[in-house]
Image (cartoon, rainbow, N blue to C red; front, top):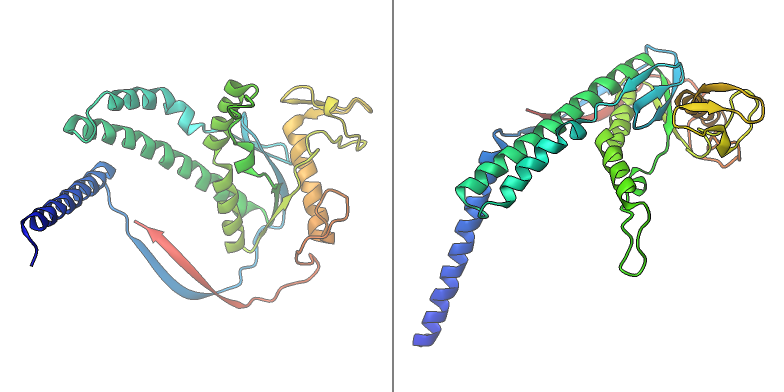
Amino acid sequence: MPDGEQQRDMRRFAGACRFVYNKALALQKTNYEAGGKWFASIQTEREVEQPIPAATSAIGIDRGITRFATMSDGSFIASLNSFKKHEQRLARYQRRMSCKVKFSKNWNKAKRKVQKIHTHIGNARQDFLHKATTAISQNHAMVAIKDLQVGNMSKSSKGTTDTSGKNVAAKSGLNKAILDQGWGKFRRQLEYKLNWNGGMLIPVPAHYTSQTCLACGHIAKENRLTQARFACVDCGHEENADVVGAMNVLARGYRVAACGEDGSGRGRKTPTKPASVKQEPTKVTTREVTHV
């Protein structure tokens, strides 16, 4: 049997545990109420025929900031910049939230407004990406894109305490712009939608695609002195820089599909299916997840 001091310690411990439990329960309730909706995931399994693409064309895509995606046929998709459009409004509500007592009613009210803006930004970006990837996957059997390492491209440039970063403000703005585009989601959606339609996505090395002349093959950083203009210093060929990049991406995609190279012309082999082999329709098992 515990003595008096031990009983008091155990009661304090039990009370503290109950306090933490109630606090966590209240936070969970607040989070549910702030989201304003519920999510249910339903998973099904079925057999489907291996699809045969209805489209026969191929296209190269160069992703960017000013233009979200430029196609090798000269068309382009303008950037949505969902976060940028609501950045000032979001910052204003975040400042209001920071002035409130944490977990108070006013703090929770301000938090719900911040969450609502974030939800609107995410929904707008998701809708934009789905519409873009659906249109591309339905109209093309092969899509070549740059194999961009988005995580590395959007790393912070602040540096360390010993070594300070360079052009921190400019790099920070570029990082936000890159993340606002949703390049990673774009590639993921494009890949599985092309698979659904029987097409294929081919990532190719990104180096020198915007500096290689389509007319003579000359490679030089001086070929692209501005963001939008390409002018070869060797033969004088001029073109929109993003279109040049997309056409070079498509050319590398053809090399990957035909020869199994990495598309850069250096002969490094990558595992890929021979383009000349015709696949017979087969039954495959897929899993679908629906959010409502």
